[in-house]
Amino acid sequence: MAEITVIGLGSMGMGMAQSLLRAGHVVHGLDISSERTAAFEAEGGAPGSLAEALGASSILVCVVLNAAQTHEVLFAEGGAAAHLPEGAAIISCATIAPSQAREFADMASAKGLHYLDAPISGGAIKAAQGQLSIMASGAPEAFAAAEPALDAMAATVHCLGDDAGAGSAMKAVNQLLAGVHIAAMGEAMALGISQGLDPARIVEVISASAGSSWMFENRGPHVVEGDYTPRSAVNIWPKDLGIVGGIAGEAKLPVPMTEAALAQFKSAAEAGDGLVDDAAVIKVYARAAGLTLPGDA
Image (cartoon, rainbow, N blue to C red; front, side, top):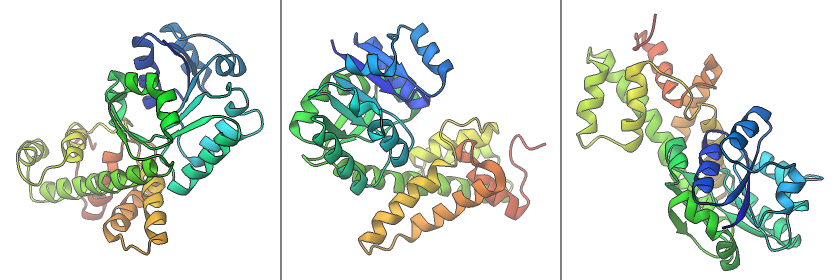
């Protein structure tokens, strides 16, 4: 049993913290929302201030949005790294550029801490089930120190090497495909609807056909139901596909499909759909063609 702090109790972090609790660990959950922190404590989370929680923890799981938040939480004045005991492990889960992961690993090492570059995939449901896919890279000592938490949170931990950055690079590959597939879902569903096909039948037939993808099968039903409750918001994709574009630019690698998908998500965000489910990318196509989608008044 380990004592663990989870910072960031959003849709992913809350499920991860719950999975750690079920595994028998002592878990502190911290969030900028006092309501989320209180809700986790009501489920059995250990109480304590930031300093108290981190001072007692051998593992910190950082589940925030981006590199700026990761830096703020970990390394700003009074940040988490200042309170963790020497030899503690940081499991950093945000989608960031590989160069930023390497920078954070160096900063952690300078403080006597282990850093695991460990982006996550699987969504909120798998987070709550302890069935995430974690793409991790870092020193063997970092993996060993983080192992109790990894075992509780993941169905699969992909060990991608001894140096931070490889985990973030692999997450960029995943996000390229995921973002393109969601945009393609919206385009395909809109095409079918424009031809008078029933949206539910589109999902049924394509899900059993060669043109399907995991994202089509997952997001298509959101369109059918007209339900854009944000499981994964549109606003995530300008950030994540922007990271993909930045990495590709450094490598002088053309990524036209990424650029096309990024443009659609930017259009969706600019139209006011940034905070709703990313399946709402279909609305970009619907507005252009004057289509009526399920749930439209």
